[in-house]
Amino acid sequence: TTNTVSEINTIVASATNTATAVGEVETVILTANGTSWSTSITDIQRTFWDIDGAGSTAFAAGSDGLIAKSTDGGASWTILTYGTGSAEWSGVAVADASTLWVGRNTGVINKSTDGGVTWNAQGPTLYNIRDMDDATSAVVWAVGDGGGIDKTVDGGGTWLPQVSGVTQNLVAVDAVDVSTAVAVGTSGKFLITTDGGTTWTSKATGVSVDLYGVSFVSATTGWITGESGTI
Image 1 (cartoon, rainbow, N blue to C red):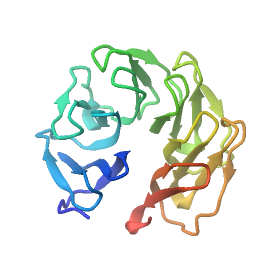
Image 2 (cartoon, rainbow, N blue to C red):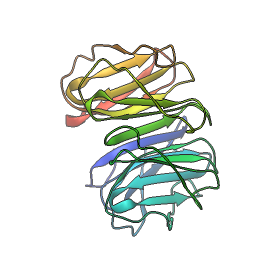
Image 3 (tube, rainbow, N blue to C red):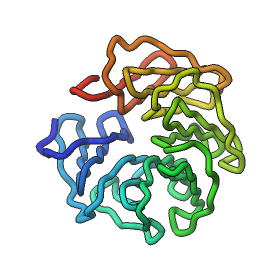
């Protein structure tokens, strides 16, 4: 639990008991023991939609063109000069401290290979990207509205659509490895692939609420989160 009253949009764990969560305006909360949480004051008057990291370096994507970077595990943040404009960066995938992708709600993906100093456009791809995750520096998935799934196997040089078999909006994706990924979305939708995305299979979750987050450690073990406190 946490003492913040803001809504939490996503969370990323960097170790067994270490995690950073982000959400509504200025909300960044951290735990180093898995039990107690502290709030990091960002002074950034924007909503954080997604966060991902490698080691102590993390990047956050958010409203009004926000892209922010932390080099101390989320304790402090710097707005990158690239992050301007009215469209939202809704997804971020970080392979290492230098290599990352950000996805926009207009379907655009951009990549940086120097830690967010410069960016190269890759896209457009999906309409309204909701989330991204990388298995390696070459293999990345992106999900979005209408059951959309795109994947690259060459670091973003080419993005190809995959058939999800669903029409629900997909809100979050987690790449377990180059073959296995899971995705969740509205109306309790849960999908899994174990063949790199050639086929995606729906699995029953037992809930009908919208699902916002997913984190799996293997093809059979993981967590999903959603509205109304669903875990």
